[in-house]
Length: 200
Length: 224
Image 1 (cartoon, rainbow over the protein chains, first blue to last red):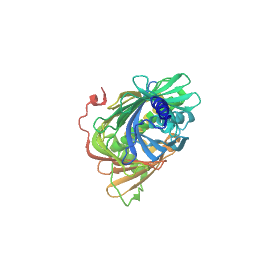
Image 2: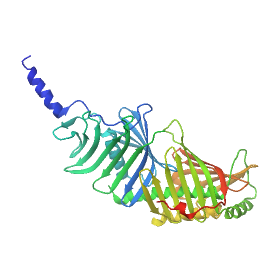
Image 3: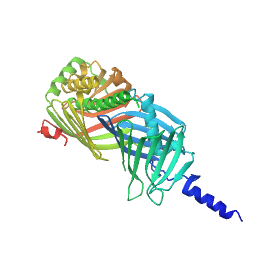
Image 4: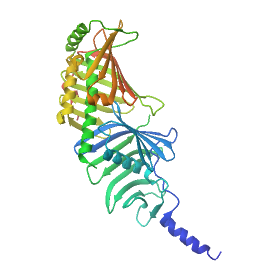
């Protein structure tokens, strides 16, 4: 019993700033009822812009299937994301390039939380927001930030070494507290992804 | 990230959008409905008639339903909207449901607008765009049946012609197994387009309430 205050102090420290077992509430980007999320996607790269339909389907606790369709036509990309990597089910030949696919994997892996599955985070509540930081590779980490008391995630960033490579934001539907839209911006080249949820 | 790779991707994808205008223009130059088809015996006669009829279509307005069948989903994704074509190379497809989406081709300019963004793309931004633009023009002028990019099989019943287009051009071939058109014999406008993808998915467009050669202002092909 005499160690109880000490244990409480240690636990308290870890809950405020340190490694915790509990995970932050990474937004569910697929619907809870049918495990499918439909999004209108707009991608801007350099001076080019395109839009289409993005379908995300949770296929298991640790895998998400991603399908990208042209608005008025064919499927361009079908891939499965997991914490270990990605598997291509179909890719239009112009898109079937390792660097493009890797960018898709990292972007949607960060947005969906797939990249941090089963990883431990470091919590920092010393600022206005609460930050949950995960090491995902050597010199590479993802931080999810919450500005609210309920630890709902509002934004995130991916860091390579000491520079931020990607930042992303989550916007919630006030009527049901689910995701209404997301925005992801690359910092080392001009690429912005906007996702608006489609409610059928 | 390799910039060239991404640019190639975007140009490629945008050009796919143009691809569809081609099919919609095919829709304008032909017409539909079908079952129990027999091969058209006088292919040359059909081609001539097709070119003649399509030449007479200066504008076309219609409603459309789009059914997208994706293997990953249990249900088809259905949308609808309005379709407007004006010679020589103007097209406006406005999706109303389930969400607003506007796609406009105005000569050499493509405009896309949704609730997030409006963007403009030049059709002439790469060789692929030029090629597809040419195909689009061929469709409008009735030359699509002479296109080297497709092998065409034509059959018919009492109401419609059934055209099966098998792509033999590399880009088209990588996307589609075949494109099926149902063309109404009454006015040579397309009633249905089936885009059968190499991935196994498909997109079907069904046109209705067609109005030929009504007044269509050029202004509706400018997106603000």
